[in-house]
Image: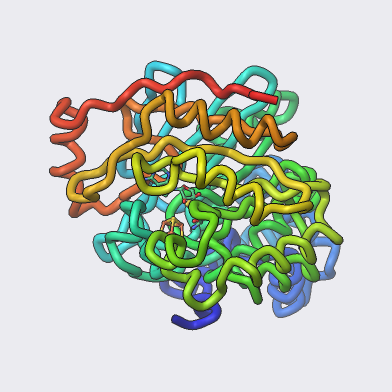
Length: 386
Ligand code: SAH
Ligand code: SF4
């Protein structure tokens, strides 16, 4: 598997450039190529990302000639929305068309005092974790910057947050949708930078979380380039099991992962790493394994987020019982580690993170599931057991 896949070029339709595919420097370069001053690029950045405007005519502080030029040569276009589902608990899920039969999903999870957008970075995923329906699809391609930042740009409009005076609903972004963000590194980095940019979305580093299965060299790059909150998908405390669950472990085993987390913490905006741990019945959820987790973590400052497995057809795996999850969580919290159990949100629309199959060709099977052939097990609200 390549360390990171090369980003695709900005999508050009005819001779139009999609401005969502350009970062701040890209907009400056575009303006320069048209003989415009750099401050024009700043104005454009604000119009597009801060105010969510897509009509060039509405960009009133740009000279008319520039607006006309933009109208002829550029566009602001997010991926087309195929479906929009709203769950009983107000979780929203959008299926986005990224062409050639590929679709990715994006989820918005509203909670008291905050709203989290879960974005995708790849169509499919090459890591092929044993328990992940995205991985089971194989890898189609990296999303481009316009497709990744376009998710936030579009969700801001859909949730009504970018018009002047309206309160933003998206306070947090997590890269926990489809794909391994650190295997689409350049695009992920550019998207993260736009999310943090005060002229764009102005989110704090602590409120943007990159989740990785453990691509160690890219964890180090992110630490140097733009450290944001980090979530690491651990799932097993020993190499023999993690090799099976997260095949990338064969390349980057647990002792190296521990060191990479420790290095990351030196620059991280939060003073802990969040470990995600999918709870698989009889596989990784015993109390003895919780003890092994504690031994592996040792003195690394961390929190644990236990994710009840979201079953999918043919996985051959089961979700741990609530009782086993509680015991596992208790072992960690008794040792002083803040441990939460993720509430499965949007179960009725199949919107739980990590459950994002997103392949339009897979719709029929998913429709069957929604009709109740597989009944989701209700899980308790997130419990800080500490
Ligand atoms: N590729 C990244 C981010 C996307 S997956 C990563 O693996 O971290 C986001 C989270 O969902 C990961 O922790 C992943 O392990 C988890 N996940 C994947 N499939 C799942 C499933 N079927 N049930 C529960 N969690 C799952
Ligand atoms: Fe890829 Fe993450 Fe799924 Fe593993 S869990 S296959 S890394 S998306």
